Image (cartoon, rainbow, N blue to C red; front, side, top):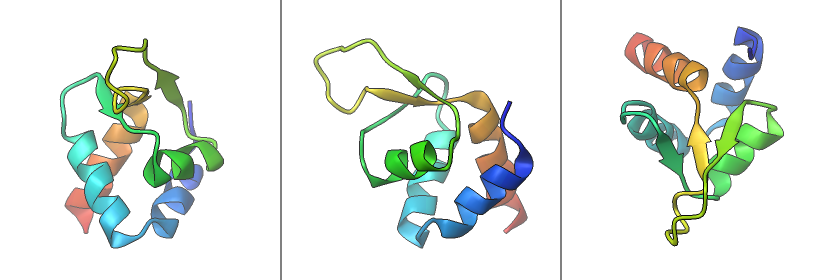
Length: 80
């Protein structure tokens, strides 16, 4: 389980565009698939949990935002 402070620190470093993408992903039904991009890189660098997806032939389906991160993002976006 990821601690709240790590997620808050990660969120504080995101650009507004990255936050918008994170919110859109967090509100999606699981599995919440993400491209390997700058947003995914911020999660990995912050030590947040992700899950690798099985290759589907679609490069955007490589990483999953897990429930605990999605729950944090949705809570935080509602509070803003």
